Every structure is written in C-alpha cells, then in structure tokens.
Image (tube, rainbow over all chains, first blue to last red; front, top):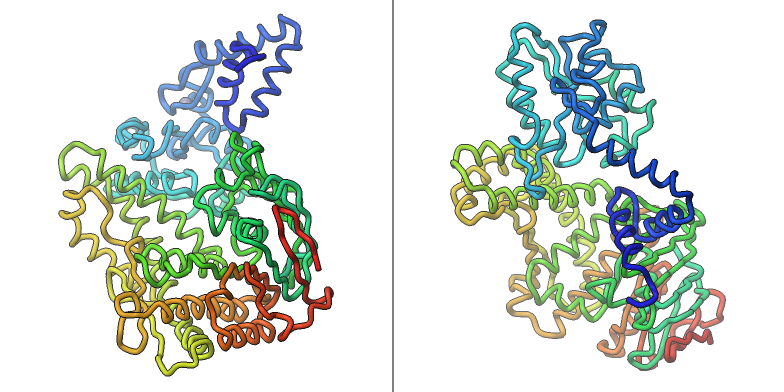
Length: 202
Length: 375
Ligand SMILES: [Zn+2]
C-alpha cells in the first residue's frame, strides 16, 4: 500500500487484536496516541509491560494479584469452607463488588473447549481437587459460577462429576436471572448479586 | 407486519435507491439483471440478516464499493413502528441495528419481522438432499420460536466441540469417553428439544400443506410429510432424551472410529409424499413446483395463525412458470389472505385483471439498471 506508514499499520494490527476493538477503532487509538506527548505514551507502554512482567497470580486460588497468596486467601475473616469456582480473575473482581460472597475463590484460567484445544488438564482443575482433598481445610460447599455457554456448561458438568464422590461437599451453581447467552462480565451487579443469593444445588 | 420504505446503498446494482412501498401488493417488473430480485432480497436481509439468493455477503456488495447499507422502516401489530439497518463492509463484517442500536447477535433479529419467500431455488426443497428441507423447517420454526433458534445454535456449537474432540483426541479410550460426557449431556439436552419441536410443528403443518396443495393443484392427490429422526419422533422431550441416550450409547464405537457425531437432529430427514409415492423419486416437474409452492403458502398461513401478525411475503419470479389458471388461483389467495406482498416478474403478468393498482393499497414498479420507478 502506498501513502501509508508500515509502522502505523503494525501498531493498528496489534491494537485491533484487543477485545472489543475493530480495525476502525484501532486506527483511531493509534492516531490518538501519535498526537500525545512522548511521556504519556511511554507511561502507557511501561504500564503494559509491567502488567505482563510484574503481576503475579495467587498460588492458591489463581487470581491476578500483587501478592502471593492474595489478600482474599489470607483474610482470616473469609469463610474457608466455601470455594467459588470462576473462569477468569475478572469474574472474581465482579463478584467481589456485589459483597454477596464471603468465601474464597478458585480461578480456572479457562474452560473446557476442544475447539480451542483446551481439555480438563489445561485448566486449573487438578489444583482445585488438591484444595478439596486438603484435610487441614475442609470444604463444605463448591459454588460453580461459570458462564452459561456451552463451554461453561461442559466444565460445570465435568467438575460436578469429579466432586460427586465427596459426600461432605455440596456443589451449587449460581442461578442466572440473566438473559440467556450473556457473558458474566456483561451482567449488572444487581443481577449478579441476586443470582448469588439464589444459587441452587447442581 | 409491513415495511413502508427501503433504502439501499451499494447493494448489488442499487448504488443509491429509496423506495416507498404500498401496504398490500407490490409488483415489480423489469428485465433480467435489472435489479428486481435485489430489491426484495434487501427486504429479506432486514428480516433474516442474510440473502435468500447469495451464499455470502461478499457477493452482495456493489463491486465498486467497499460496503453496503440497507435501511428499512417497519410497522406491525406487536411493535408498531421501528427501523432496521443492516450494514456490511469487507473489513468489519455485518452488523444489524434496530432503531440505531446494534444487536449483540445477528440471530436476535430473527422473528422480529416474520417473512416467507417463494423463489425459483425452492425446487431444491423437494428435489435435493435433506439439508434443504432441514433449513426450511428450521427457518419456519425459528421465526415463531426464539427458544428453538437458541437450541439450534447451541446444538451446533456443542456438535462442533464434540466433533473436534473426536477428531483431535489421541489417548486412551476410557479418557475420551469421560471427556465426551459433558458434551453428550448438552447434545442430548438441545437435540431432544429440537426433535420434540420439529415433531410438534410438522404435525400441525400437515393440514396446512394439504389444504394449500389442494387449492393450488386442484388435484385429487393428497400430500403428506413424514418426519424421520434417529428414533421414533415424539413431542415429549423426556421420551426423546431417553431414546437419545440409548442411541448415543449404541453408536459409541462407530462414532469413536469415524470421529464424528452420527446421532442427532442434524441428520434428520423430512420425506414428502403425494398419496403413497415419494415425491423426490417419482414426482413430475409440475408436481415438484406445485408442492414447493404449497409448502410456502402453508408457511404463510401457518405464520398468520401462530403469530399476532401477517408475515411479509416475497415471491421472486414465480409467475412465469405458472399457467393462467394457477396464476389466478394463487393471486386470488394472496389478495384475500396475504399481508404485504412483493412480487417480481420479468414478463408482465396480467395482474390488473385481479387488483386495482391505485397507488394506495397496491402499487406497480419498474426497475431498470438499478433505478426504480413507481408507476
Ligand atoms: Zn488467592
């Protein structure tokens, strides 16, 4: 292509990969950045690099955190006998905002999806089973708060089957008073809060 | 349901076209390639989010332009007044807006504006493979039941996941069987709901079909359709589920060997009969044509009864194939029973014998090189 910059095109390509960004808005962001002062752009670049390099995951629950273990896993006021299983860290942040749940979390880091080459061994299911098997911290409820799509359903089904032999563990799932097919992150707080309050046995 | 206006930009040969429609009969004449079909295909886009002619949106963009836009205004009994816009560009793909606000999924549009199409391609319905008949029944049910459409989409997704697992997994047999289980559960759930709904609707649809075939053919043959699925059809979801579980168990070895999902409504067949003989094997050209016409008329009447509104009816180039007597019967039926109707025709059909083109209720148009003139 003539009359355009290869460097600009490369930046647009990278930006267009971000969720919710099409080529059009990627171009707008790139041109916006070009107009900014150097230090502003550098600050953004540094923040992005730091995000990837310095941030850690809690080795217990898997949530993105500055400390390991995270502040939820180390908080003595939280109910240690309840684990809420979610797909990604952002789901933890969302549920925390509702103030409805006072137990701990387990972030799977994905859901089962053969199309994306993700099997049960590729998400943190064995880590969850270790926590269930840990006799020092008995678990009496596992709450499945996964997206109501096919992959979330398949993962919930698989987990429920694994947890069935544990008589002392009750498996519940949050009730969705939500539009079918919606992703967790698009649900407003009030709905999510009510969904938690009305969770039912799997 | 009716549309009062359609605006097309770079849609095939319509670079910039705006048409105001009459509430009942709209007859569009012009040479082949003038752009008649494109006009009603644009209306179809606003009802079903896709073309009824082209297999891909790419082919629909005017060759000199990077995008197309279609906008329509609709008025109906359920929703009294709203705009639908469909835009497509090669980079950004297709988007649908209802009153300027974007839909999350294209499928959210289906059912908002019920539509029935009769086109020359419909001869495939009775003469070709089961895929055509499945998409006919799916389009029919989806427009009256959003839950059915959701089940179809979920079933397709689960089947793709399951097929990928069957194809890609390399490991012990007992592990893949364990990994298949969560997908089996969903396959059975969605698949059973699809089979139950198809059974129910096809059962009701029989009498509509018989009535329309009799009307349009004037013949003594009795049409009949037989729904074939992996088990004995039933309207009871629990019954189907139990049968699905057994059928899937039975097919397990075969599925593991062939690495594909072999049991489910994606393999369903609907067999058409005239009296006792199978139409696809023994029907004449004329019988095929009349059967397809009856199917679409039956759909029109079925919708009219199931919904609180009459569907939009699009007839693309069908009158050329009908003799004078059939033309009259069909036109009379449309005038008396159909809602807003769009008819395209290359050769002038003596429509004014049957209806008054006053410009108020009924209107005639000519199309030439993408230019539309209301007469
Ligand atoms: Zn933690």
